[in-house]
Image (cartoon, rainbow, N blue to C red; front, side, top):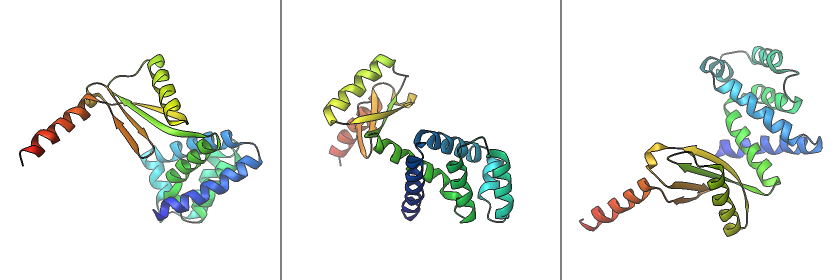
Length: 181
């Protein structure tokens, strides 16, 4: 929780600067790219997170690798995290920035998980129905989970709607076994 609050502060500061420079999308895209480049490779991640590696060396490597290839604000945020020994916050800062970006557009996150990939038309109908029902715009992330067997599971913030076959089977199991106790 404390890390989330701290990450939110960093994200708010960078988001504010990005708005002033009219570069919100560019900074967001580059923060995501930096985070992915740094954290997806185990060796790069170990180098970035390791407290025993000199901060100046990390800064030198990051600057040499990303200077001129990413927005200046995105790179400076990563360098600031290194200087403050808060490298482990990078993923959360990027997530908090993404949240700020969505909120500024009046959108909320919506995760739709299904056993098979939904056709674009099906997904559009589902999202439009939810937008009308909840009076909000959504930014959709579609995930595939074959264990759902069929149907969909929807996450809107902390609200979960489970219309999957697996979810209904779990519910039936709880009812049947809960009644025998």
